[in-house]
Amino acid sequence: MMWAVISAFWLQHAPVLSVLLPTFTAVLLLLIGDPSGLSAQGGAHDDARLRWRRRLSMASMLLGAFMAASLVWHASQGELLVYQLGEWPAPFGIVLVVDRLSALMVLLTYAVAVPAMWYATGGWDCRGRHFHALFQFQLMGLCGAFLTGDLFNLFVFFEVLLIASYVLLVHGQGKERFRMGVHYVVLNLAASGLFLIGLGMVYAATGTLNMADVALRVGQLTGDSALIARAAALVLLVVFGLKAAIVPLYFWLPATYASASAPVAALFAIMTKVGVYSIIRVHWGVFGVEAGEAALAAQGWLLPLALTTSVLGVLGALAAHSMARLVAYLTVSSVGTILAGVGLFTPATLSASLYYTLHSTVVIAGLFLLVELMASQRGEARDKLQPAVALREPLLLGLMMIFGAASAAGLPPLPGFLGKLMVLESSSGLPAQAWVWTVVLVVGFFSIVGLARAGVVVFWHVQPAQDGVGTSGTSLKLLSAVWAIMLMTVLMAVLASPIKRYTDAAAAQLADQALYVRAVLGPDRAGTPTMRPYDGVRPAPTVKPMEERP
View 1: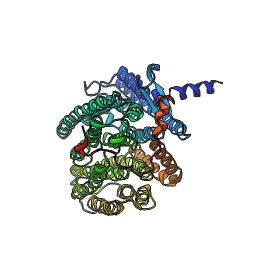
View 2: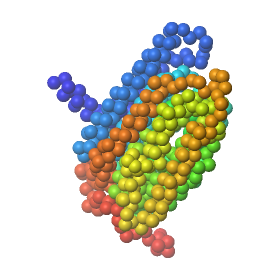
View 3: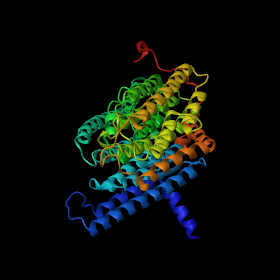
C-alpha cells in the first residue's frame, strides 16, 4: 500500500522533483558550510564537514540518476507527463513536460555527472569553495532546461546553469582559468541578450512563449508576422549554435574546456548538448513542418554548418598541442556529426543522431578524466603533446587510452561505430547523402590519426625520469570513475538494439507535433486538422514572392 502511494506521488510530481532535488541539495550543502580556502586551521571538524558534503552530494546524485531512469521507463510507454506549476493550465502557466527526448537527456546528464562527481571527490572538490553546491545548481539548470515546456523558462534555466558554470570553470583558480573565464562569461552574456531578443520576436508574432502554443499559432501566421517568426527562428538558431559550439561560433570552446579542471570539463561535455537539444526542440517541435510560412526555417543553414563544424573540429584536433585541447576539439567535431543528422530533418536521421549523442557525450567526458590521469604522471609537461617522462602505469593507462580513442574515432564494435553507421544508413537516398558520407568517414579517419599521434607522443616519446618526477601512481577512486564510463560505453554497444528502438520512438514522438500540443494544451486547443507527423518530406513552400507581400 505504501509503495503504491509513493509510486503515485512520484508519477504525479516527477518532473518538478527532478528539478527540486538538486536545488534542495545545493541549499543543504550551503547550510553545512564550506570553509575550504578560508583558513589553514582545518582540523577534524572541517574533515567531518567535507565527508558529509561528499556523502550528501553523491547520495543526491545517485537518487537523481534513479529518478531519471524511472522517467525514461515511464516515457518509453509513450505517454507524455505534463506538470502544471501552481496548477495554472498552459499556456497561462509554466509547464514541465516529460517525453522520450527530455527523459533521455536527463538520464544522460546523470550518466556523466555521477562519475564526474565521484572523480572530484578524489581531491578536486577541496581546491575551491562550494564545489558540491555549484555542481548541484548546474544539475538543476540542466534538468530544468531539458524538462521545461516554455521558451522563457528555457532561458531562465540556461542562466541558472551558466551562472554555476562560470564559477565551476575557475574552480581551482589559475591565470589561464580566469582568462578563459572572462571570455566565456562575456560571450554567454551576449548570447543571453540575443536570446531575449529572439524570445521577444516570437512573442510579438504569436503572443505566447509556451512551446506547444507557439507551435499551434505559428502555422497560422501570414505576411509580416510569419516573417518575424522566421527571423526569430534564425536568431534562436544563432543562440543555440553558440551554446552547441557550431561554426562560426565554436572558437570559445577548445581553450575554455581545456583550461577547466577535469571533473568540470567532464560535466561540461553535456553543456554543448543543451544547445543541440534546444535546436531539436525548437526547430523540430516549434518551427517544424507544420509552421506554415516559417516551416523548417533552419533547414538551409543547419546541415552545411554541421558538416563544416565536424571538419574544422577534427582539423583542430590534429593541430592541438595538448591532450585536453585535442579532446575539446573532438567535442566540437562530435557536435557537428550530431547536428548533421538533425539537419537532414527526417525521423530516421534524428534517431541516429540521438544514439550518437549518448555515445559521444559519455566518451568525451571519460577522455577528459583520462587525460588528467595521464598528465599527473608526466611531470612538468602535464598534458602537453611533447616528450616527457614515462608514465608510471603505461600498460593500464595505455589500454584505457586505446579504448577511449577507439570509442571516440568510431571503430567497431564500439557504439561510436554503430552511431556513425546509423547516421550513414539513415542518410541513404537523401540529396545530401554524398556530403554526409564523405564528411563522416573522413572525420573518423582523421580522428584516428589525431588520437594515434597523441598516443605515440605520450607513450613512446619519453625521457629518463628525474627524482620525484612521474613517480606517483593513480588512485583506485580516480580510476573507477573512468572505468564506470568505459562500462557505460560497452553497455551502449551491447544494448544498441533497445536503445535504437527508444531513439526511433523518440524521433517519431517529436515529429508528431499534434500529440505534444494535445498533451500540453488539452484536446480542445489541439483540434487542428492540418497537423500530422513529419515524414521527412518538406511541403511545398507557401512563402509569397517579395513583390506580392503587403
